[in-house]
Image 1: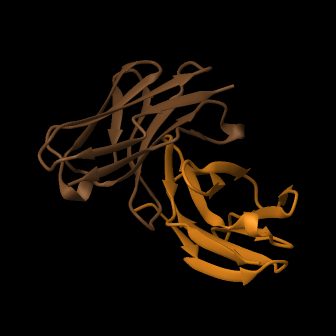
Image 2 (image 1 turned 45 degrees about the vertical axis):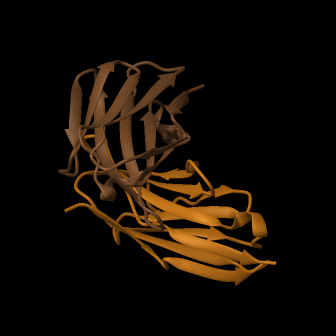
Length: 112
Length: 110
């Protein structure tokens, strides 16, 4: 079965500092991978998705970026965090669609 | 612009009641509609719907899709306190995009 590892679980970073969140997938190959952000009390906002190595689609223009250096690795980055970047970040993977999409356990980022 | 709208945004009912959650959508090249339950952390998958009029059931939960009117409903019968959660509707579009609604926060009173 498919498993998503996402770390860290919580992160407190000062404004202007860099960010790197990593997501790795086990139990599947060539999955579609997604980064979502969930602000408090709101739904999931799609940030980036990737259908293969080096292929990134961006949904929301912002100071975040994503990379997929390996088939089962998806990285969310920022050079300089803003207060508005605070939120709950979720990585998701899709392989066998009829089983839905699998989510990682999320990273709660607080920018102070 | 693709969008998914859920209603109500929040709902409080008593244990044993039946609830209906709504999801309407406007997306380009619809592939499927998904329902998730989110308690504290990651959403957990409930249903994937691709065809109109075919009800999917899992215990006390059921869901149906209307592709002509572009909406889906999620029903929960005989609610229990463990059903308290945020219920998320998402639509999968061609090009592998998955767009979520803002969710319905359901609270079941004992």
